[in-house]
Structure formats: structure tokens, C-alpha cells
Length: 155
Image (cartoon, rainbow, N blue to C red; front, top):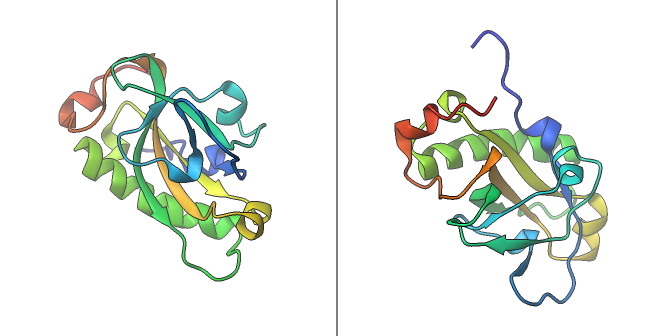
């Protein structure tokens, strides 16, 4: 592609520490591949931090699906830029492994949930969570979609 795809840095959502959760609510740092949820516009534009999300069955309407997650093992906060750079590599690989097509050839976007400096020291939110974004929302999983994920006109 002649212009770089929107990836990660623009949508690097900050994770804030979650408290006691009930129902289908999940702390973002506990999300795993295959979890689906709907991220709000505030989260997607980076104007709001995110502590937890309400997960739904991937057969229900959602705009976000976790394609992978990675524990960050640094002893001190590595910095937002470093986390975003790591996320770019990790999340693109996760997308390929989970969906079955290279992210750059798909009709979906991709964003990470990363810890903030405050959550790094205050909680166990020390993971990079890689999330595929479907706009408009979908009602199926992206897992194993392969080439079918290239044909969806979402942009």
C-alpha cells in the first residue's frame, strides 16, 4: 500500500486498573483471544481510558475481538512509545495467526490495549492486548476467516 494503514499508535488505548467485576464484565488485562466486546467511541478515539469491558458472545453484535495478549515482563514501566512499538509487531502477528490473513490485506483495523504508567505501578495491568476492530459492528468471530476477511468493505 502506498499509504501506511491506521495501526495501533492512533488507537493505543490506555488500560486503567479494574476493580471487582461481576456479570460479563472483564478487566481489560484479563481479556484473551476470542473475547468479543463493543468499544465505545471514547475508547476508540483515545479520549477515555478503559478499565473493563462487557464481553459478549461473538455471535452477538460487537466491534472488537481480541486476537492475542502478551504479558509485559519489564521490571519498570518501559514507556508508552516502547509499548506501542512492541504492540505493532506483536499484534500484527497475532492477527495473522488468529484470523488467517495478513492484517494489511484485511478489511479490519487493529488496536492494542496497553498499560499506563499509573496502572503499571498500582496494579497487575501489565499486558498488551491486541484487538481487531470491525466497523460497522459484526455478529460473527474473525477466527480463521482467512481470505474472507479481505473482502469486507468497512472503510
